[in-house]
Image (tube, rainbow, N blue to C red; front, side, top):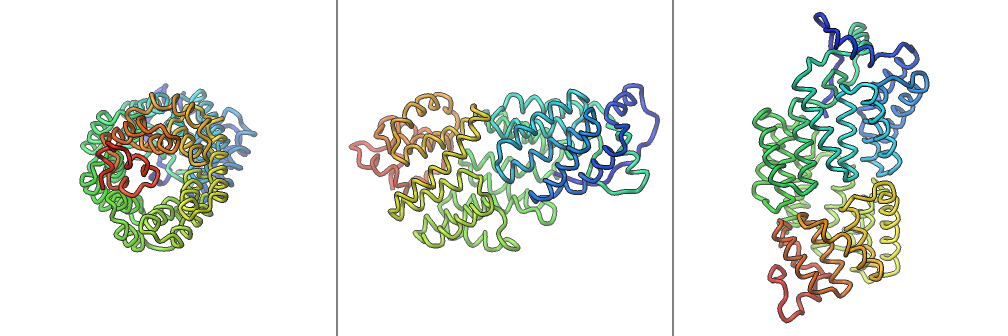
Length: 441
């Protein structure tokens, strides 16, 4: 997400624009000042700074509950906090703030963007897609003048986060990139790829469009194309942006090139602060049989993001491999507890439900896993990773025919067959008279 400075307001405004500015402004000097203070912290990548921003934004809204921009910024801050700490309350409150912001000002692009991202995060894909379409339309049709308070910031020469009409929504292609990612999450891969390519055609230098197209290729097993797109994104990304490099590590993992993945991760600058990177390094060591190193990195990942259920599940897998079923069960129980919290708030998220089925099976609670699998299976027919997880769970619970069909489907949808070779959950399938062909070593 780009950041910048407040823009000077130039030219005469239409009546519609003046009405838009009036809706977005506040007559409360305290609300204005508190929002300005919040913007100094909002772009941070640290939970502590986001908490400060959220505090000031809530105080601004206590002074002026109709301050639309502050509601929109609060939605952005809460979304970012959820991304860091996985706290369901943050994303739930963020959705409420975004809805309030666009009720007060339907043209507030930042609020639509934050709301769309929040809906996407919790699996409400049609609602997310609608928000990104609205953003796209607003950017195409509007001159997007600054709000009154933003003009005052610019007039005083004060630097703030990018609060222009297109706001922290970034460049013109960003709404397209988010829309494409949402469609990909929903299993509409062909449509998603077409929209990613449209975004790249419109803005060839947008590193995010190349990056997210590469992630789409990763999810569908098109690893050579993924590598090409991610290398392009890496060449275009601003200094310090490591997402393309992080996903190039994933390409190596998906190819089964575990030592290469570790070497690539070691070349990244500075200490490891990204929990998924730590977990991926742990997974590479796990695959190589270097269990002490895997344990080290899995535990680092959990320290960096203790509320992430997948990281807890990875530790459970490692403990099972070491024969420590009691502690593995405890790790899976923590993962399930985190999933239960998230699914209680957002019950329709299929990815989390497939994890839930797998962790129940890992805990030998098949009487609970199988009915849930029955409900989830018809809904994930276009998702490779969900099919893979469900196949593992069903193999553990003795549903071998269904498991075989699902693992075949997972590979057909793009799951890397290289990752199946040493999967212990499928050992029972390999012993079948006619094992799935994708499990051939």
